[in-house]
Length: 124
Image (cartoon, rainbow, N blue to C red):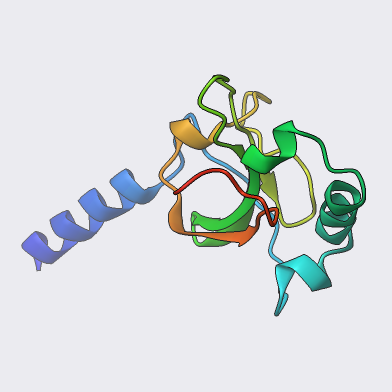
């Protein structure tokens, strides 16, 4: 019994809040590119106003702490850009210190590209 309690205590300590704890909203959708108005608006704007740089842009859906998030990525080899994460309401994900959380700082799971231009120039 003591061994079980010890294991459970260790589990809860390591899975509890941390300095970088994130409060992400819950949301449900079937197709993010169609069901989330803010995301659909970004895609429509990009498709209506293509630029030379747009061929390096993509939108990725992933999971962070088991909740959906979105990354507006850029794979331009000449640009080193800090890529932030958006929650399913279109807000920039921030930690408890109100600092933006960047894609390279967290472990995103189930990453998949959900939008890219027709002339996409990268192989990811």
